[in-house]
Every structure is written in structure tokens, then in C-alpha cells.
Image 1 (cartoon, rainbow, N blue to C red):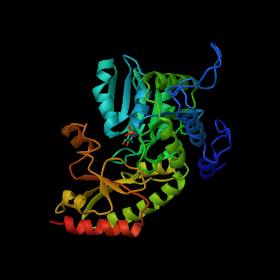
Image 2 (spheres, rainbow, N blue to C red):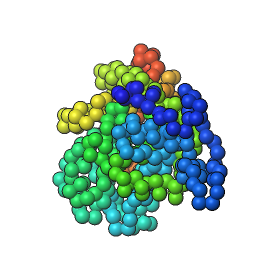
Image 3 (tube, helix red, strand yellow):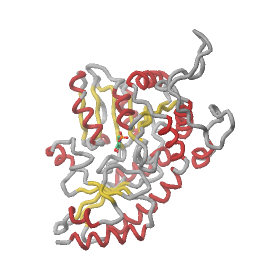
Image 4 (cartoon, helix red, strand yellow):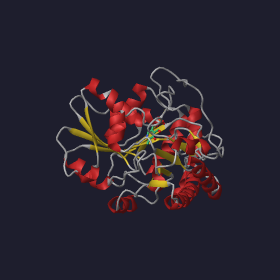
Length: 378
Ligand SMILES: Cc1ncc(COP(=O)(O)O)c(C=O)c1O
């Protein structure tokens, strides 16, 4: 089955006794046993729940993974993956990862005796130290849309037995199949494109390694941040339109990039592959689309606060991946956990704005950007 068919029809008949076209939502916290030592498929919904299992089985098929695990947020998914590490281990991350991921490594690793390093460009490292046990990659990165060569970094990591984890939130399996590029684990904020309607906070981890899957299931059950049945249902529903939504969002994104790059009030437009020819070639090799997140900086003489306030269709809000277009100011919003010095060093400037492009009419979106740019000129 092709991707678009799988997301609609791929749910298995399991846990659906009446063959309902939409599988039922099982809200029960606990399940009756016939007797002591007589185990059923389900016992307690933190560990397994039929609706969550339905989503996990479907998502594993969609991702091309042996197993997928659904969490109560993207950060819960990432935390379960970081829980695989132990004292003395070191993690490399690309330098502009999502602010919450940075908050985790900066705020928690030291207490656990785990080291981390933010690497300016993972594409230029040739080898890693023996204590590096994980390379955590967000590609394209948030908010600068820098691109890392997954296959290359996986080869380097695997020479030393380190794991490669890719946060594929921005592209989803529709555009980028990271496990087939050599990543060991893929993580998602399913709050974004997988849910797709800005109405569910969720995360997913998927892998092809049986031993890692067992450890992640253990973490999921033990840390307890599992996805509720209602939210699992919301993801099953959201996933069905992933390709339709992303096709439209990407089409709008290309039109908006064309508009912004030609506007005299715009100093820079960042999108996956825009940083250099090298990154463009990597992006084209490893993904079939650039997604629908871009960032931009206005020229001197334009006020970004007035610009953001003047937009009528782009709401100022964190998050992305819903059908509505949003604008955000990474320095004060999504990436406020980075110190001012680190923001400066990385390029998360005060003037940087991130756009998450929705499914509205592209002409309306461009007209809105245009009128806000006119008003922002000082
Ligand atoms: C790339 C990326 N990864 C992870 C997360 C965390 O996900 P959540 O907000 O669902 O916990 C986010 C949230 O914005 C994100 O953008």
C-alpha cells in the first residue's frame, strides 16, 4: 500500500469487534481478568490500551518501523529516549534543537552524570569520542532549518556503537524516512503534523531494534507519560489527512518563499536546504519535501514587532503543524530556554521570526504578509 492509502486504510481490524469504520475508543482504565494467573490482552491502560495500541500499530506501519510507542507529549517521547542513557555517557546534538529538548539536556543531564555537546555543524564531524553514546539530530532544525546528513552521521555513530536519534517532527514520514537512512530511533512531537489540528499534545517514538523497543516500552510504562485513549483517537483521525494537508502546506510554503525572497523588506529567508548548496543537496537526497516551516529576518528599517502584530491571518503563537498559519518569535517563545549568549552564537537573533504555514489560500496568506510588511516599514 502506498503512503496515502496506508494512513487511511492501514488500521488493522484488531480491537474492533463490530467492524466499525472508525474503531471504538476504549476509555477503560482497567480490564477484567477471568481468574488469577489468567491473563488477557489488556490489564491496565497505562501499559496497554486498545485504542492507543491501534494508533501505535498503524503508526509503526506508516513509519516502516517494527514498533511505535505513543506518549503524552513530544517531550515525553524524547525523555523516554534520553532515559536510555546512563552516567558517563555523552550526547551530541545539533546546535539549534527545539528549546524544550535543550531545556532537558541543559537542566537534567548534569544531575545524571551525562554530558552533552551542541555541535555547530554535524555534517563536518568525521569521528566521535568513545563516550559518545547517542547523536540526537533535528533535521531540518528548529528554528534555523539547518540540514544534517542522516546517513553519514549514522555511519559515523555506528562505527563506535552509538545510537542515532532523529527528531522528524518537521517532515514526518511523508517526506523523510529516517529509519531507512540509518537512524536507530525516530521521535516526533505528534502535537504538530501528525495530529494536524492543534488540538492534541502527543509524542511518538519508533524503532526497528527489538532490544531498544523493549527498553522504550519499559520506559513508557514506568515513567507513565502514556497517551490517553481520546488523544490516540485524535491522532488516528489526524493521521488520515497527513499527506493531503502537507501537500497543500508545502505548496503554500513554496509560494510564500518566492514572495518573501523577492520582497525588499526581507533580509533573509531560511528553509530546509537554503543554508548552502551542500545542505540543499543533502535535503534533496534524504527528503522528498521541505515541509512547511520557514524563518525570516526583516531588513533594517523594518520593525518585526509591528510586522507580527499587523498580521491578520498568521496568529502569534508557539507550535506548528496545524492547519492554521502561525508566526512565532523563537528568541522569546520556543527557544527562551537558550541563554541570550547562546541564542546569539547560534543565530537565534531578536529579529528572527518563524512561520508555520497552514492550508489557507496562498494568495490570502501572501496578501497578509505584504500588508504587514508595508505597516512594519519605519
Ligand atoms: C521539533 C520539536 N520536537 C519536539 C517538540 C516537543 O513536543 P511537545 O510540545 O509535543 O512536547 C517540539 C515542540 O514544539 C518540536 O517543535
